[in-house]
Length: 152
Image (cartoon, rainbow, N blue to C red; front, side, top):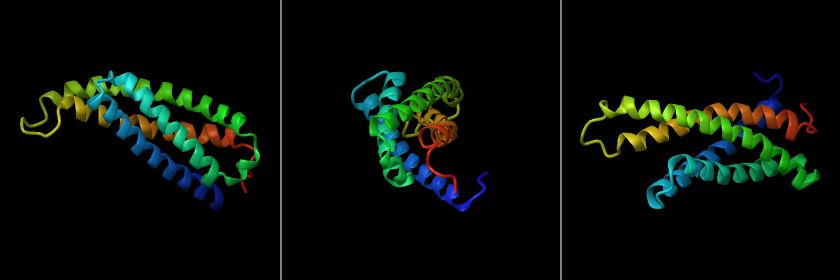
């Protein structure tokens, strides 16, 4: 997928940052839904947004440390635009898979299963959406937000 070792390392760092963002996303998704009773799609939008800010900071500081020389707000604006497109992709995939999984899981999970089919469904849906959006975010940010960083 990547022609040089430096880009492989960058992708690995980007993915690790994404994993931290995923934990943040899932934590806040579940917190907003289960503790505050926020609607699932709204909760997903909020949790995803918190994760985006986390990811931008870590990618700027760790994955692409050379980018710290660039203007913060310009770079964050680009990252935010990529993330908003990613959010639209994420929410679309989440909504489609969540509804399908709820119906599929209703008769599948045992009665004594500790989580409802709804909880299992929205967590699986969030995971699927996250994996798809990882690739969108990496390539869009690599070739737009962080394009001035050498590929070598």
